[in-house]
Length: 312
Image (cartoon, rainbow, N blue to C red):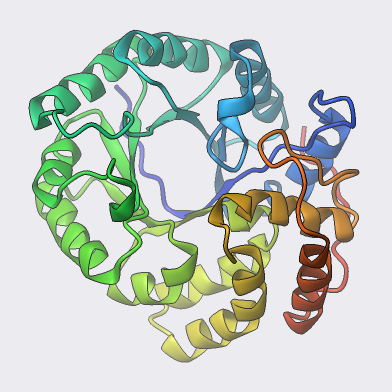
């Protein structure tokens, strides 16, 4: 298997929909042109939570991969989420994603189960690697979800030769730091990608090899600035970017948290990047969300965004 290292900014794309529920491909094309084409975006992650994978059919997931692949510039990596309930489903999704053109599979944990053993998790990940024959990234869920990996298990998984990255979303800084050290000890070839929107500044201060976030669909340039400042070990610049983003982050990731990606769509719609904020998984946002998002965009200094086409 070809060695691969994921670093820099990976954008987890949202997926626009038409009023009748179908995928809005022109809006998606415009979105990719905005958040995927810039040189600051090193990889694009599709069919994750931001892309409402759970609400897509198998054919739609493959269509999203193929469409995205056709729009990326040479050298950009295409990462596909793999959300499954059991091993056979995961193996089938791995084959479909590979055939559609994915470069990397991000393995979401199986649903929480108090009886699942570490050996069963290892077998699950190995089965996906064998079926898809692609490099794997692991999604470390928030510890409160009940589906996250323990630090020792995460280290075991990171040591697998097929694993190239960890999307680290533990949602606590103490566990992030523990996992950062454990993963680095298990394999120097595995990239640790902070993905907790509430903790980007703190996570990068501890250490990270890049960023992976749905927020990059909305503010790719600002997250690139945060990342490059961290590469320079420039804490003053990191704080400045984080301060600018603070009002928008708090508006997008307010409770209830499952509405976060619908709010990103709402912001992108307000800015004219996509034609509709409709979501399949969140039927309707409260009316005052639109007011809060618009005010937060203004406070963050984001009043308009260019509409560009993705590179062919």
